[in-house]
Image 1: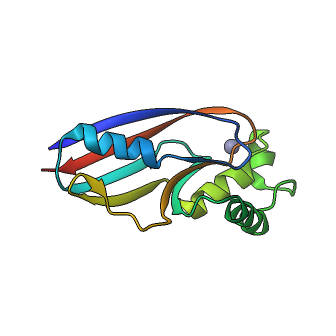
Image 2 (image 1 turned 60 degrees about the horizontal axis):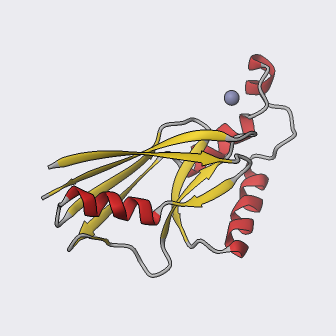
Length: 138
Ligand code: ZN
């Protein structure tokens, strides 16, 4: 059985992190499947999904680490060629990636105690994002 749920998420951009764990859990429960895998996919080029502890200190640490990897406010070819301002957003989303696979069993996601499913929006302004949650199981 395959069931696809599309989550609509309004963000502020600028590295905002949103905990999707409860919404993904809801999609698994609504699927009626007992066990299987869940794919979480964000279909945008300046956002990403990851598994992380969701805690203010770590959120700041992640943002500072990504700022070191792809700083905002320095020259990028993408910005120059496209009159854009979000090359650093594209680079950060590429590093984290657009998708996750999380198994579930007994209708529960098999996550560790501190693991949360987190959307990060790296774009430079508020965006409306679609996150696809596809449940495959029996
Ligand atoms: Zn761009």
